Image (cartoon, rainbow, N blue to C red; front, side, top):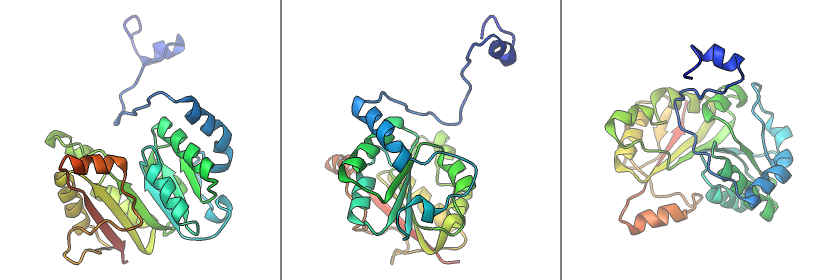
Length: 239
């Protein structure tokens, strides 16, 4: 701000001063195809953030179970899942705009009608826009592991976050997590084992084999070639 004594003076002068955020939004540059996909398809496949509950019957052209993915990246696996399960309705939330554009581009090419996307903070969406007990599955695949110990508190899977997920899942619905960081998998397992109202679907009370509905991504294949493991956790809401 240099010549300004405070934030208010800078704003009064019409000068933008960046503010500290609790997360870093990795924006990246939109390709022409991604930008065009957003312009052409947002009206039919995009959901604008607003602090009121969504009506899934109005949002989709069919009734059916609703699956929501937090942080879908470039959207390849989400689009594949939607294409392979046309009777299921999918919602994807992502803050990376090129990823949103890529997802919309792929979905439009396949003519999907059972997929909607949002470009917003997932926590706000959960708190303001999702009806209670309305989701059949919540997916969180390969979130930022924040692998340094001093950053572990930034990991998204924390007790408060899990309680929020539970509130939006229907009884019998599941929270499916996947990570290629063993330490984060152990952290997820510890948090979920202490979460009230959830039951681990693993027969060994830890991890499950990759469910058939979760596609193997290029990112995952690359990790496997480097010797990285992948851990899937599926917990069912039972109460």
